[in-house]
Length: 156
Ligand SMILES: O=c1ccn([C@H]2C[C@H](O)[C@@H](COP(=O)(O)OP(=O)(O)OP(=O)(O)O)O2)c(=O)[nH]1
Ligand SMILES: [Mg+2]
Image 1 (tube, rainbow, N blue to C red):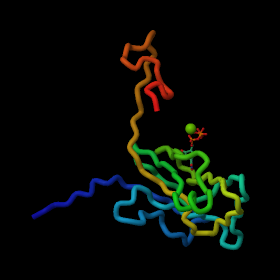
Image 2 (spheres, rainbow, N blue to C red; image 1 turned 90 degrees about the vertical axis):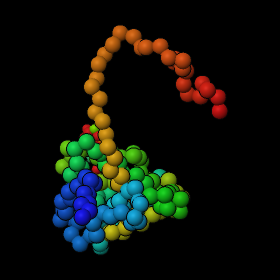
Image 3 (spheres, rainbow, N blue to C red; image 1 turned 135 degrees about the vertical axis):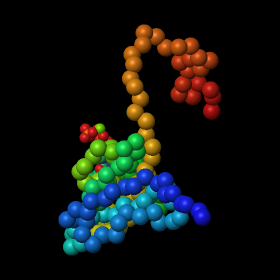
């Protein structure tokens, strides 16, 4: 007999009133790293994002990110390539203790107005493990071969 254990962490979602009727965020292919997030804008009032403008777009859900993980809100490459739409704060960070609605900070870097309709897949969320470090102040840095070289010090 084979016992299969599902070791994936559980992501609890709480649907808000503005998320009524929306598809759950979902992985759109078997190996997708991110689950697509949908715009919970009013059906009757799509959001027009003018060139150069930004907007905080609701998703209609509270995400209970499991402890030891974060939610990274990332752009969709298709929207970025075709329309110049990206996340201004990419990757957005959703903390595991956040209990507000997840929102997506979109910006239109394209030349045309972009219309965001209800249910449109506007971004994706990657659940990733995080480590909180212990913070310790010490008097001086240890020696290494690199030393203080950075920002292109090894050449192009
Ligand atoms: O794209 C994002 C980024 C953040 N958040 C929410 C969840 C996150 O836990 C919270 C705070 O985000 P962050 O720490 O990046 O922002 P801050 O400016 O440091 O705000 P705060 O002082 O609330 O931590 O805002 C989103 O819904 N979407
Ligand atoms: Mg913060």
